[in-house]
Image: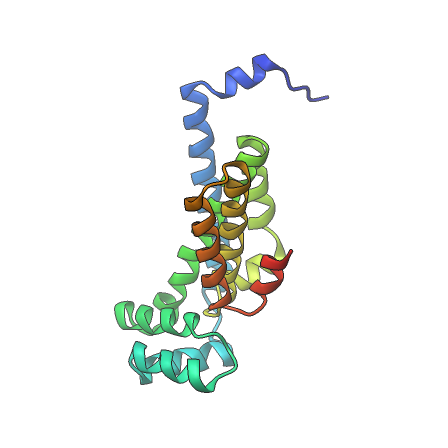
Length: 196
């Protein structure tokens, strides 16, 4: 049976144990990203991934942003990010999907932070483990689609909401509102997160 006492809490707050937790997070996150990458390394683009990539190659980021904003049913931020990313790193499957790997790492970091803020750092590691090996997250976190950004923005929005609730000031409120707006410009399902 596990028990938690003040002495245990004091032990986890020592400098060595804090370093251990962060190293454990880094290793866990690297392991999750490695597993995800190995699972998706041999997969070809799906049709909607190829469509976004083709659009990113054909237009300038600004022109594509305006086209999507004025004539498409999707919010334009993902297309703008895609355009900029393809112009920076190229359009091969490996390099274009690397943005999803970076997004996965950022999402895992936000997940760790929100669980550590709500509970403790061990809960943060557990939350990273659970999220990282969830089938749905594994599948969508390495595709060249909007979902990895939406997941990261959702966790970031929740973290900023928690910080605003704990310390209500204009700066925290502004960050929360900006994160919500960015989420809405990425995917309309973010409205459900903000409304919840």
